[in-house]
Image (cartoon, rainbow, N blue to C red):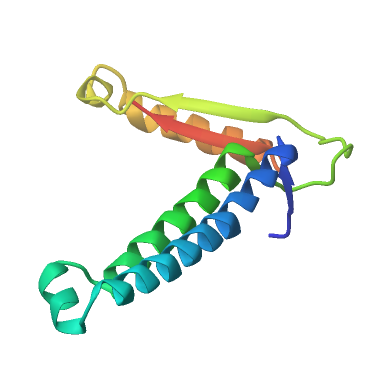
Length: 139
């Protein structure tokens, strides 16, 4: 199935600029932190002071944060997958059928059962509605 991607609020996609901005700020912070730690003293002292710190964990956490920012920006711009071109008129009707499948439909007061009769009716209806969009709800 081919389709078109359209955004309900494409102006909100400008929020995607927050992702590289966040990366730039993190890089500047990382460089500042490294320079400051080097000025404080030896690597042995640095390792002892920062035992729980992991550079890999820092970058992984912030990479995931940046990805979530991007996904949030895309989500709030409301992407829509269109199956027809904008302005194209859809022909036909949308038909929604609700079918009760509870135990009461299995009652033997009529032949065939209520459920079998409903299924036969739906089958005939679907065959008669060729080309229409049909939905089925069970309750």
